[in-house]
Image (cartoon, rainbow, N blue to C red; front, side, top):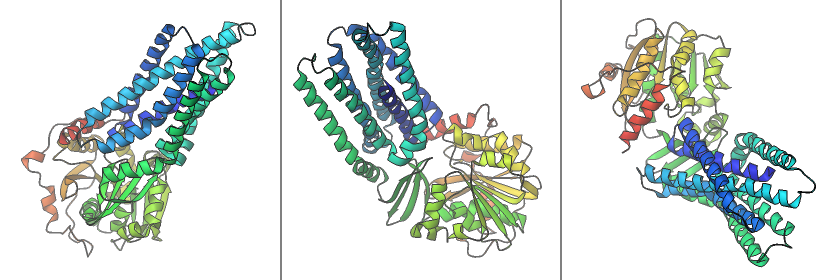
Length: 499
């Protein structure tokens, strides 16, 4: 029961994790996957009353089925997402919930059958209450072990595909043990043994082919040649390289294209630092790729830069990989830079250092974990670290494709008493992209910018503040920690944009 419970929870967590990686909004995906899985387990428990004969044989078949289907569930979902055409989200969701229903139903059948088998085998040694107590105790202990090991050990070390296959093999091992333990009473023992051998062989082949499957799926999904494919404790990191340049993807979402990222990062950094005039201390939140830090270091008066990045894997990659380090001009090795591995939200609470400028370069608010970094609570913390006369800049989203989401960020900044100066720039890889300056003293366009910029100019900067009618301001509520309206708005708008 310890092993069976561990396997069952792994399949549930793997389905939820893959859904959140590929579909976004981790809270929604985990909630719906877990709810569907629990419903299916209840359905399986109800169906167990109709299993009356050959209990051991039925249990053995269920273990093989759940091991095969559950073990290959991550691989099947990953491959399906790569094969299905763009915009086929409904088909992927149908497959996801169909597999969750099947695996959950099979898992729901396990405990009732085990209880009945044990009651028959040990009716003279244990009372029913003792059997129930022991079965459920080991069931919950197995779930606890996996709940801790899944995010801390299994996924970082093995990845989702290998983790699923490994626990599928454990289910198959339970079937083999049952085959040996009850060999004297099993009819068609040879057929069961062949079935066990077939399932184990399939899972072993999948275990050894996990890397090849992952590489094939990612090559199909990303198009260009993949030069980096790694998993950190927080995300899947893929870097591609093609004739037009390099791309960085986090959990399948494009973060930058090397051919035009300078437009994005120049627009993000220089309106704030240039308006200050002489920034000495600069805080960069997010941006572990070092590209924003590269732009900050173009201001000769900067003496200290603090980079707060949650994922140290990203920092190591863009510091130590030759090709990627060239993109940020080796900024992550600058003696002016201090790198802090921490969650920005909690770091701002625990630190009291003041900065002349703050650059906020987080991924878009695709889930509630990221959405908290776009709330009034977060911007209040940013304000407390902004020196008098300082400016902060935040990347938002597209004011064209996600218009209400963009102006929600503006409303959120204003709700904490800060002035907001919205502006936008055209980045070919993303289209029209939005930024917001936050400040207490009035902002004026800088009169001087660092030399060598490829996009931003003193004369051209005022044009970035002009919003045509299709991007003009719309009414929007502030995004608060207790009610993250931005996450729902963002998902709705970008969902329509991708249709």
